[in-house]
Image (cartoon, rainbow, N blue to C red):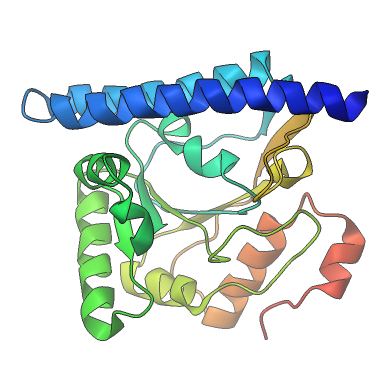
Length: 243
């Protein structure tokens, strides 16, 4: 019975979400020649609608422990599902999110993402791609936008704590800005790559700000531990902390 109810709620959720995504993506692209603010409004509206249907249909409760200042720093989020990626335009006014290059090829959505100012991550692009990514990140910081990085590189089921991808260390060193790590446990009820979602609570826990200029090993260790703060202790013992 519990699964059947969760399945029914999930079906209703996906219908509402896909309809809203289509409308907001098209609206964001159409609005661009008229107003960049209107484009950003459509994106923020998409994130807002997603949160509302999570609350109303899926019976989710969202808790934020600590403050996420909307300032030009590097945020590093735990990445357990699509939930926290969709939430970014709601958590910040105009975040510059690092996103996989292939996502920009999605019809309409990809165009809206480029217009909005997401930063493509081309892992196979070599030095040229890295320079382009760095330039986009610096431009975002100059515009007082927070940067958002999912340093694990992919969605990780709750309870796993893989090491950070090498890209974090490069961004941290070259950008020279503080890092704010954020743990999230969305994978418990909003699991990655699964259609059925469950009722429950999703928590964001903001860690202590990590200053710029630390040695790579120390910065990685502190970020890794902070973003995994909502994992069970045994996950950290079994995981691989940065060397």
